[in-house]
Structures are given as structure tokens and as C-alpha cells.
Length: 248
Image (tube, rainbow, N blue to C red):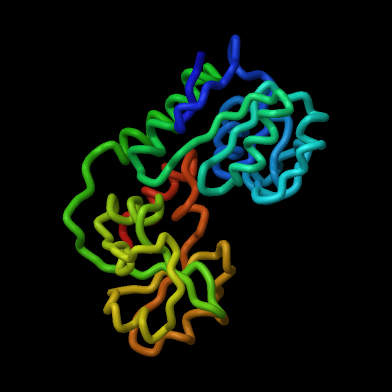
């Protein structure tokens, strides 16, 4: 009997052949590694760009009837991105659900390893490369950054999440990484008072642009970055290392 990242039993008798993914980053990972397995994904699963599978609504409001109609032998979910209620009801309907828990880079590597090796029985090359690139300890910080994820109200990346640990592995300290909240509400004044060297403005979940975001910060340099590279684990990890390692 396989156990997911929460230690829940997942009744599979062989490799998962019909998979519905409720996690955009894992959807991409499966789609580029063993695309024949993927039969359904959420509306938020935007990568790869040519993904052509049945859509089952959103991460927080999946269409459980549509998922059941696809007759999957496995649904992949994530503790942060998906609701426990939906996981429980899918299991009550007799559908096997594999829940991932990913709050750090090492967790991402180990969780993806178990999913692909034990559940999908598929060994993608990008996973080996991601482990090579990210497998070492986090270096001493050389830079401090703040990462807003919303405005009106302003919210930033806080503690106990993948983005903060990813930045740490790049030598970047999250100015709000010691906050008690995972995604605390704040203000521009509080962000600048934290004295980050740079404010990183991602394009998701809020779409910061040249005309929407940088103008709010009078004292602190800003940089537009890909939200996917900051928050998606999977093939994006390889691209993130190449693109974000020279943050300044």
C-alpha cells in the first residue's frame, strides 16, 4: 500500500495510468514527462501551452462529477492548493487521491521523486537535473527581497512556503520570511520599512506589470519576475535556477 505525503493510504495496484491533476505545477510535470497518463486538469493548469486534456474547473472548486466521469485511477492534489473537503469527497466516491506537501525545495524534490518513481513509474530527466541544481544546502544570503503577491490589499510571501525556501537556496533572504503568516497582509510603507534590496513583482496570482506595481515603490528597486518560476515545482525548477540565480 502506497502512502502519500500526509501518510494517507493510496490504493493502487500498479502504475497510475489515468491521472487527473489539481495542481498546475504537477500538471506540467506529468504533461512533459508521461503525457499519455494525464486525462484531466484544472482551468489554472496553463503549462505546457498546448495542453489538451479535459478541464475540471478550479483548484479550490473542482468539478467532482467531471472528475468521476473521467474514471481516473488517481487524482493528484496538494495540501496548500486544494481543499481537504474535495480530497475527502473524492475518496468517499472511491477515487484514489495522492496529496503532496511541498513547502521547501528539498520537500519538492523528494515529493516529486516519490510521485514519479513510486506512483507513475516514470523517470523524467528534468527531475535528475533539478536535484543536481538544487540538492545542496542554502548558501549565506547575499540579498534581501520582498515578494508581493497581491495589491489592494497588499499581500506578500511570508513564512513556511516553497517560494521563501527557493529564494533562500538562491542566496536571497525573504524580508518577510519570519512573519507568523504564510501570506501576510501589509502595506507599501511596511514593505519599504523592511528595507529589502529589491521588491520582486511576479505575474501571478496578481499580474504585476511595468504599469502596475513598480510605481508604488519610491525608495526600493523593483524587478518583474515570472510567478511560475517562483512558485511552481517540477520542470520549472530547472528554468528557475537558470533565470533567478543572478537576482540583484
